[in-house]
Image (cartoon, rainbow, N blue to C red; front, side):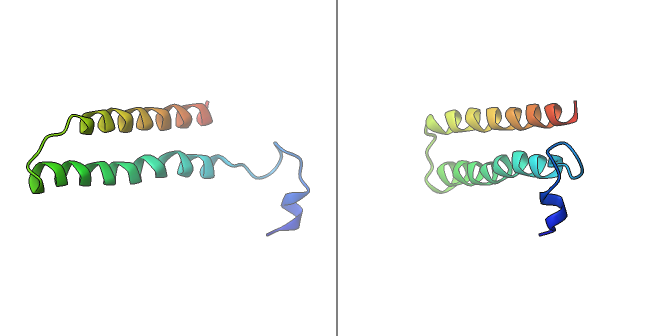
Length: 76
């Protein structure tokens, strides 16, 4: 790690915007993969339609909306 970056006060030099954006979008991306796998498993393999799947989908949508709000906030 570059020592000169550590001595700069906050707000000068490097920015954390790319890391914030990546962090805000990685969690919903992985969650979407697992939610899709859960829907596939319960519908196609187990032949059931549990109601909690829809609550999980709503939670995923809220997670995506949160990531959108973080992205908007970082760029404004």
